[in-house]
Length: 254
Image (cartoon, rainbow, N blue to C red; front, side, top):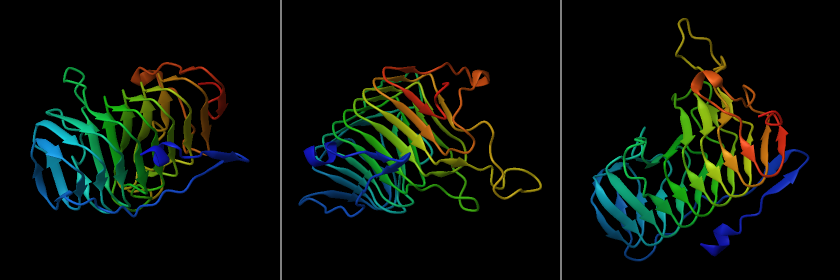
């Protein structure tokens, strides 16, 4: 976990570069869900290889929670009935989907990751009202211009480290009402309406997307290369971001 906490963010000529390995070795005695419901209880480590969801109660994973390539955990929504504590890291593979926390403001907000959340080309992440003591790193992914349509909401979380979301192409994407201890880098994300308009216009951009607003950020807020440009949307109740360091790029005025 300490090695993953020590991820180096290299910002050179406006380009964020980092390497994430999607190969994860299972620990002895780990549990694998290939489909269905994950019961409350204690797990040494947990790997999801199919379509799975939490069934309620409290789930404790001592080491890593892994969503394998193409698998899904709580698809389309974080679980409002389950409190999850991950002692290690949450790792999401290519085409994977993770729902973590809860979308219900009135529900308990006790789900915690002691390490990092690292996603390498995920289809989408649905993370809300969760605490991440390390970093949130998401590189690439999404359904693209012609693939499966997904949105990518990251709302109402506490992230003690850095938050980096870069290179995702899909439906609506937003980073809203989060408290981040260090830096936020939101770069090269593209929102496309895909086939949701009639007649379809391949690659048409959703002008309501790239909402980066109402966040409290300890250090810098850096936004580059997003389509549409990163924005605060007052029609959605958005407010300017509170930033301890600098606002850079598309977020200079946000």
